[in-house]
Image (cartoon, rainbow, N blue to C red; front, side, top):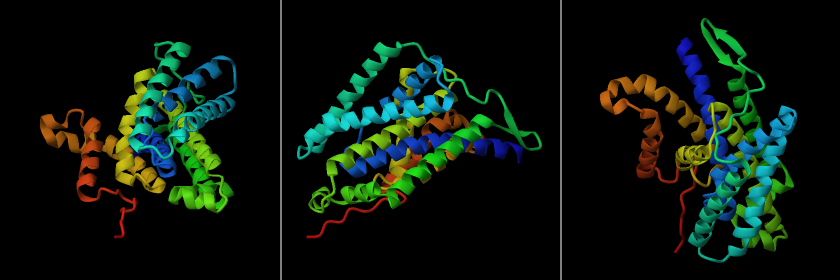
Amino acid sequence: MTDVIMLAAAGLSLGAMYALVALGFSVIYRASRVFNFAHGELLGIGAFSMTSLLAAGLPWPAALAVAMTLAGLIAAGVERAVVRPMIGRPVFVTIILTLFVALLLRALMIVIWGVQPRAIESPFGEAELAVSGDAAISYQTLAQIGVAVLAMAAFFALLKYSRLGIGMRATSTDQEVAQALGIPVGRVLGATWFLAGMLAGLAGVFAAMKHAMFGHESTLIIAFRAFPAVIVGGLTSPVGTVIAGFLLGLLEIFAPVYLGPHLGGFGHNLQNVFPYVIMILFLMVRPYGLLGQRDVERL
């Protein structure tokens, strides 16, 4: 029971990071019909700027807010400078441009922060919460789960109850109709990318705290590992991607412990491939994901 509690906490913490990244992917795709390949670099901007802000003496909450805002502003800038002028062009052209933006942002991060990995100190130190018996969960893990859940709850509340959220939902359904109804589609798209960038910046900070040292390669790896959550949850379903992110985080932690020993040599590094096995199964059986919508064409 002790092991299950600790593994579940680790899985939820990992899943929270995946859910934040996958939610950003899904929100941008729904709004712009573009898969943003520069999303991983936004994680790096959040993480590396956080290290600089803490080194400059900013309090932890203020540094986190500034790092998230910076990642959001850069995401909104990419939408305004690169994606919006491509409206009406083939989608693959915009996707290729996001690959170019990813390389540009990575080069910019190397120029500003160098190539050496960095670390973010936890504000809680090594403090732990005793749960049951010998089970203890670090306050850092609990804080990551709590902050991620609050951030995603705030996003969904904004999406459902605010005027901006109504505009985002209308724009994701049909941009031309939304514009005809007087919705400022350009501003809505910019706000959508900004919010997705903020979520990515938060995920980047979590990733840097989870790894002892955080380097430029880590951003690409984390974004790539969160990708199955996008497919499993449904590319057009933000709620589905969040659920899938948490589920895949739990599976990635539990699978090597309880399934790996029964697979012999195939069980080594099972956590690295298991999410992709689940993704392939979903693509074969339910390609539109858990809560994604099937595309229907009326003839």
